[in-house]
Image 1 (tube, helix red, strand yellow):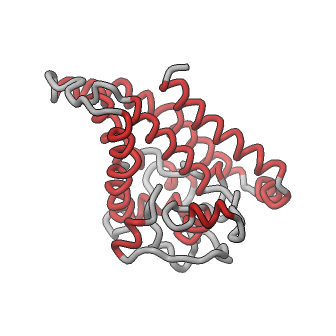
Image 2 (spheres, rainbow, N blue to C red):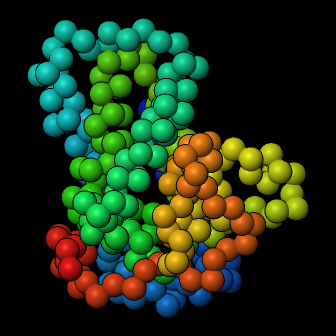
Length: 250
């Protein structure tokens, strides 16, 4: 199996697995039943954009842009698997941390707020956003750049796929018990669903910006820790469906 196929399988398998768990879990099943038609539409469109349109955009227009801007640099970086993985999973994670913080500033919050209208941690709401928000996310541009520059992108693609799978997981309610050995192993360094739930909390959503690693939030004083889930997820919004999809400025 090629690395590209494995990467796609990891992401798709994580999504299907988490959706299946949600359906079989009583609380998750109840959440799906009370989900409004508007939320189903927003989440479906978001997943389609993130899962299909953005990869197509990366493989065509953005890739060609780098071919035009850097015509002699394709495959220029000769980096082995592990360093390439570290760049993807760690270095780009730090770039995303600041990208995410920028989305919470006055300049861009009106765009990002749509993602925070999710009222329950829900894997289907992972990509809920305004249609053009992905253009403001560092992943679109940086991932394509490294895939263009790297002579062997295998390690980098592994990091990308793992980051995407973890993104789906941390938006779900599949919580690891705080008493388990797995929680003890992961909780000191990896952003878990309960950490990200506090980022979506109505009162304190300016914490836990990281995607993969907690170190960035801890380093910059934006980490909030609790083994419990917040009582209220999501922000109230007066935006209509058109505003949420196209131009979410109130």
